[in-house]
Amino acid sequence: MPTLLITGANRGIGLEFVRSYAESGWCVHACCRHPDKAKELKEIPGDVNVHRVDVTDELQVANVARSLRDQPIDLLINNAGIYGPRTGFGEQDYQAWSEVLQVNVIGLMRTVERFVEHVSQSELKRIVNISSQLGSIARNRSGAAYPYRTSKAAVNMITKGLSEDLEEKGIVVISVHPGWVQTDMGGVKAEITAEESVAGLRAIIDNLTPEQSGHFYSYDGTEMPW
Image (cartoon, rainbow, N blue to C red; front, top):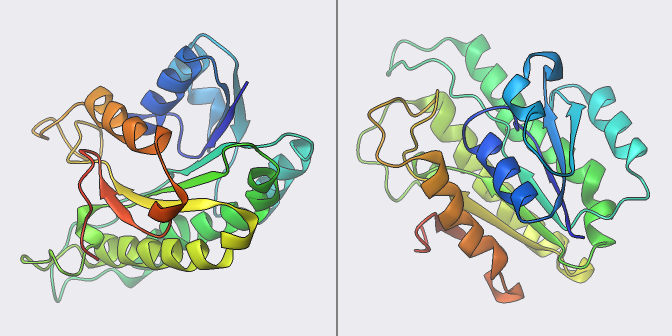
């Protein structure tokens, strides 16, 4: 039975990833900050194990990694993330910006470093970092959203670095843009549902090859520019 570990699992595409992989017979380790409030997550049928993990808390991440030390992780999805203040130039809340970077960037790297050996012991050996088209420097034609944009650009750089550092372990690492999704972050006017996003992302993930490591893809399968 293949195994998934995913952060930010209690809502949006994280919740849909859990539902989709559990339905496919995977063992799922679903990580979120407040399991006691994750009613919908706990009700998903299948082999779903819920863990308390705030990716900014080194001890929590380390404790879960230690508790799963004998468990190979075929697929690690770094989904935990926050948008931060929706402000423009001249309106920055620098403390809030720092918090975005702590969750979206530092928390992601902390999770990878703690679980990389679990992934390397697995059969599939895949790491997927949830990025965004807003992290694409080439596609920035509107400015604003500095905290979120910079965090996702940093995620893409981490992906590229990991693809080089983990190549000898046989681990494939990619960034993905999930689309503009109807979630708490994306809003009700977004273009696609979480189900559509995850279906597209799974098609990419399920067919990954080593040659794709270090690349950035949209949920529809197209490659995104850095």
